[in-house]
Structure formats: C-alpha cells, structure tokens
Length: 305
Image 1 (cartoon, rainbow, N blue to C red):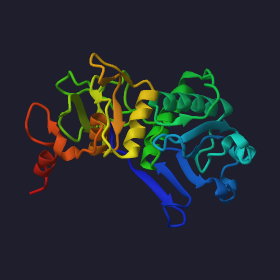
Image 2: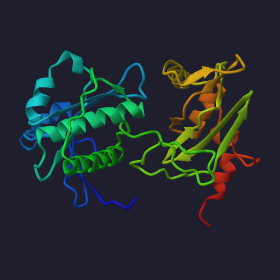
Image 3: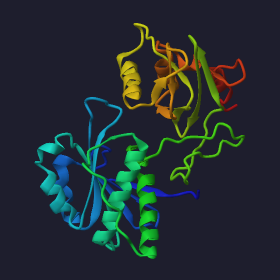
Image 4: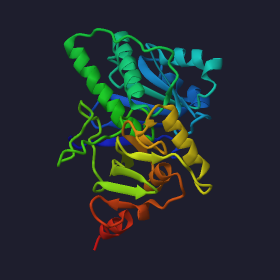
C-alpha cells in the first residue's frame, strides 16, 4: 500500500465546523457539515455525488445510524430529506463529490450501491436504507475509476473520524505472518501494533491483537456469561449487543459463550471486561501469548530508550 497525502481544510479554523478533505492529486473531495449548516455549502453541492446522513443511535451508542444516498443534484436531494420524519437522527452530513465534475448518474448510483454494501458488511453502523440498491452496469473503464473512487472514500472516512464503512481488520491467526483474512484486499492494510495476546480469567480463554488502533478479539474466544456488580453498564450493553447480533453462541460449557466472528473493542480493558464479565484492567490480565509477560509489561518495554 503506497503512502498517501491527505489535506484537511478546517474552513473556520474549528474541527467542529465545516471541513473538507482531499487526497493528493486525486479528484475526490469529501465535505463534512452539520445538518443545520447545509445552507453554507449550498453553492458547491449543486452537483452529482453521494452522501451520508449520520446521527447517534440511542439504543447502541457504539453503532451510529447512517443513511447512504446519491443524486445528480445533492442540494435538491438533501433539501428534500431535511424535514423528513424518518431522518430524525440526522446530525452530520458527509458529502462526496468529484473536483472535475465528471460524475454521471450511473457513476453515483454505482458508488451508492457499493457503499451500502460496504457498510452492511462492516457492521459498525445501523444502516437506515430500506433496501440494497442495485449495482448498475458500467463500462470497464468507468467501473475501474469508480472502484478507485470507492477506495478513496473508504480511506478518507476513518481519517475524518467515521469508521462505519471500514471492515473490522481480521488476521489469519494460524499463519506465521498474520496475513489478512478478509478474502479480499483491505482498503486500509492491517498494521499489527502488538503481539498475539491471551486472556485466561474465571474460566474464559480468549485471543486478541491490537490492529490499526483497535483491539480485535478473535473468533473462538470464550466469554463468561456471569457478570459481577463492578462491571460498568456500557460493557454490559456491549455484551448484550454482541449476543443480539448473533456473534456469541452457546458453547460446550453452559456458563460460557463462544465468539462466532472477530469483533473489535476500543481498548484493551474494554475487551477484558466484556469477556470476563467483571471490572478488569486489561494491561494486567492480558498476557503475551505463551508467556507470563503482561500486556502492560510488554507496552513498557516498547518505550523509546
């Protein structure tokens, strides 16, 4: 994966205000603006493109609500959505356009369909689209261009703080070189930031690794069903969400669940608490696999000399 130069313009000098992002000499432009300030970018979005309407999910704060759309006149389409009751959650608007104005209706329909597909596969958001749009047929050259544009969109979104279109980075734990196990190339190549970790607590057995800043707990790990009174409510919510999403299955022991697929956590301690069902310090309870060295000790050993 080659290095990229990304330029982010804070138009008002404030990260909470209107911002735009571009990649080097590429034609992609991503604009982020709050719903109530669409009028401030009206003149520049009277063009084709795709958009995301993003807001909080009160039932699961870890999974925002997201709607994906396309239009050959973004301003008209977004104005149409503005007062719709179904868009009650909408707070932030992400607008993806081309600087050279070469998008056609077929191009943006293709991008919309592919982005809906990516968000659905990533399972990081509650997708509010009522149906999966059909992927239009494009000439080979146009399809190649749009696939590159899709990759650029998926690269820029997490840089701007939006993870919902990014696949959870998974690794082939059986391979010595920990090759990617997505089955297709990753837009953002996995960077392993820790060795393989293992957690053994109150009968659980779990493996994890820190990848791209996330703690990835691997399929086959066990979770304790019982919880203590010390576990924070948001960790209880995370466990419930994993169960509701079908990611935790009954195991051989009725006191434990088995993880059916790799899942991500935002910290080493959050992963430990969710797995162990108790208030745990991840730096102490996770150990480098096949050793007695704790994650905290390993971390300390990485300190620059």
